[in-house]
Each structure stands twice: as structure tokens, then as C-alpha cells.
Length: 119
Image (cartoon, rainbow, N blue to C red):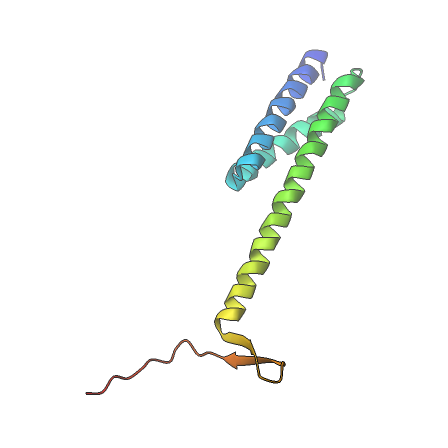
């Protein structure tokens, strides 16, 4: 691969990493998904090339690490929301209260019951 092609791939990956960062900060997961094939292609092309510009590689490495931290944070947030939603679904079917003896008690609530109104 020529030096010019390597430079173009470096620049393209740099731009893509910046766009990825913006998508992560905005929470645009669909955009992140669409970027993945291009990112993989650029990284594969750069892995095959001979590198002489270590400072550019270090810059790209810092951006990849930064984006990975952002992605890890986003994944942790998604897991947290999923756990909270599961807890809310669980709580919707029961009521936790404490009796006069101070012990916790569960009262199952069946949301499907309806009140029949008679005249």
C-alpha cells in the first residue's frame, strides 16, 4: 500500500472515530451500528500497511481507547436501565409492606382482576 493510501486511511479512520464519538455522546446506537463495517475495513487496511508515522498511530490509539470508554459507559447505562425495567415489572405484580411485627410481607396483586359493578 502506498504512503498516500495509508495517509488517506489514517485520515478516514480519524474522521470516523470522531463521528463515532459524537454518536456515542448523542446515544445514536443505530449510527454506531452502521459505522462498524467501515471501521473494520479501515482498521484491517491499516493493519496490513507498513507504518512509519508512530505519532499518528498513537493519536488513533488514544481515540479508539476514548471511544471504548464511552462505549463501555453506554453499555453500563443500558444494562442499568434493563435491570430497573425488570425490577419495575416484578414490582407491578406485588406489593411489599411491613407488618406490625416489623417483618417484610409480600402481597401479590393480580392486575387482571376487575371490579364488577352491580346496581
